[in-house]
Length: 299
Image (tube, rainbow, N blue to C red; front, side, top):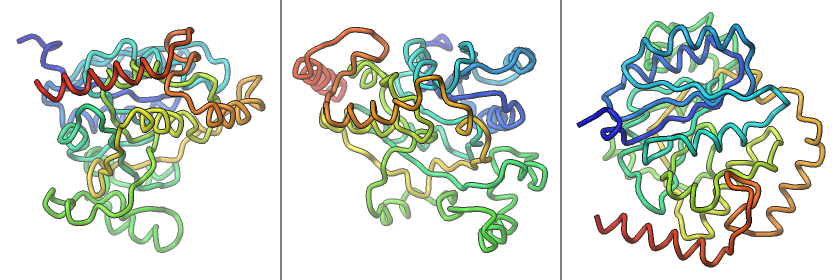
């Protein structure tokens, strides 16, 4: 069996310039590499020296790495993410932001219940960007475990948030504490590639910098009958609050909030502003997607 046919997942990491944290993310993924996933770095316009640094290390890991780059024209995450969806080889797409470092078991937690009609979402602990200089990051996939008491102290002092969402517990325990349904978080969610292709990927009108693209994906897939599954006490990550989502907006970004509200009012399944720049009938798109789900479940 070839490496390509073994791939179950593609991890898509939205990235912009912060090579130090990206390298931690890549090391954390390497600790759980088992031949079942690849990494696509979806680069929204990083500098030339950052591109060179990625090129120098991407062949040193135990999983395939591809680096997709587009010119820096402001915050255009949805465009490079759509290109990553188009090129992904894994059936399950796991989306992360490259200022987040995944912890032990992250990929397998997303794969465990992945399937047709399922959107999975996890959460993260939030720390300040310079925390990389104060925490033990020598084992990138075990930052929470190796620094738990420091992170607890920081949480009590208001220097970290959501420590409880970074704790990974056994499956039998998680099943008893599902709690309320979370909304999809763009830095930690997964879905089948066919599901995204069916609704034409991310709506590229959403250039605002607060997660409109993932809220829109959740809304459109829910309209087709998809369900959101919480990965509570699983699929955890450490968010080193970086600069990617604090960038200067693209020239027309002032109108993007209005476009998001417009998309909500349109209440469509298919977006004509996605991977394909064309329109399709929502009813036929939904019917085809539901037929694919049925076929996939019967296999």
